[in-house]
Length: 93
Image 1 (cartoon, rainbow, N blue to C red):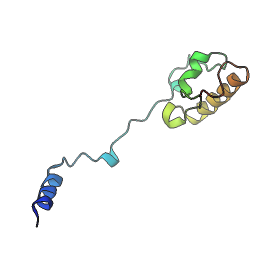
Image 2 (tube, rainbow, N blue to C red; image 1 turned 180 degrees about the horizontal axis):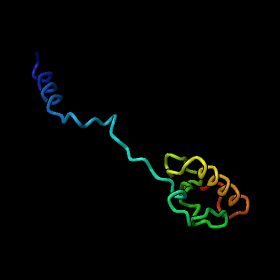
Image 3 (cartoon, helix red, strand yellow; image 1 turned 30 degrees about the vertical axis):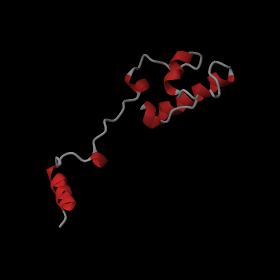
């Protein structure tokens, strides 16, 4: 066998067995609206809605915001209402 193949085998065997980048454990995000019962989503507060909108003006998905399905639907409705009354822009170029 060539020296390169032997070196690759040695390196592969020396890697920590617990570390696997494909199956690393990702911590589940907690819904910000479920965790804080005092927080009420309001379409008139732009500062609150900016957390759920990207810099381009798109609504962020659940995997990015960590919101549950129920609150993600509420976020979507609130952002759309805020867009219609010109509190949030439809898009930012």
